[in-house]
Structures are given as C-alpha cells and as structure tokens.
Amino acid sequence: MTQDRLGRIDPELASEEQKKVIARLGEGRGRIPTPFNIWLHNPQLAAGMEIIGTHIDKSPVLSEAETEVAILSTAVFWNAPYVIANHRRHALKSGLSEEVVGAILDRRRPEAVGERLGAVCDAVGDILAGGMVDDRRFARYEAELGRAVIAELLVTIGYFTSVSLAMSLHALEPKR
Image (cartoon, rainbow, N blue to C red; front, top):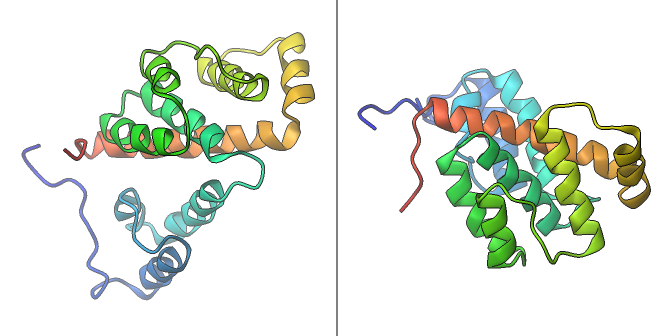
C-alpha cells in the first residue's frame, strides 16, 4: 500500500458526534475496530454500525462458531484479505476445526459438521449465492434454525459485506 487511505480520526480532534460513537465503542468493545475509522467520517452511520456490530459480537441466537462461519464465508466471497486473516484466527479460536476453516477458505461446504452447523453453512452459502432459495430449502432453514437465526445470518452477512468492501477499498492488508 503506497498511501494511507484509512484516514483515522484522532479522538482528541473528533467532533462531539464522533466522540459519542468513540465512547460507545470503548464501552462495548474496548477499542475502535478498524472499519470504524472509515465509518466515523459519517458519525450517524458509525453509530448505527456500532449497534449492529456490537450485537453481532454478542449474538443471542448464534454461537461464536456459527457467527464466524458467516463472517469468514462473507470475507472469502468478497475476497477481503484483511478480514479473512483476522477472522480465520477468530474462527479457529471459536472452536471451528482447521478442516472446516480450510473448506470455507477454499469455497467448499465444510464436511463432518453437526446438523445445525451444517444448516448454518448451507444457509450462508445460499444467501451469499444471491439467488432465490427454493421453498424446500427455506423450510429446512426455518425448521432447523428458526427465523431469528435466519435474520441474524442476514444481518451478519450484510454487516460483514460492508466491512469486507471497506477494508478492500481502503487497501488494508492482513496483519503479519
């Protein structure tokens, strides 16, 4: 990367609106996650993204491993190296095996996963494919996962689509 596209906002020089978001990030996450350095240029947007991102971090309906399947799959879909490297580590820490993580990185459906995690993997794949999900598959997701999980997967994928695109647009490279 030849130039710093991130445009970090110095918390000391931030506007009052930006300082409010920064304070909420500190309370909810203890830090300013990298994408917020982009979103803070629009404090109202950053405030909304903070609510969604903090919710995803503490999902009441997805396990950490299920959340990481959605995040890592989304990052791979958008070819976002920064997010892939970061969430590969999180995925392994969440208890996903090297085989499952490797399959996601290779754009394959992970094998040898439990019934619920398999349904999550399939639903994430269908959502990212962008096509219509037929009635039979939707009924399976509704029966095995429930509508609250379907909604959570949609929001997680949407949020991390924004994260992935933001990191790539701003030419951020994985930490080594």
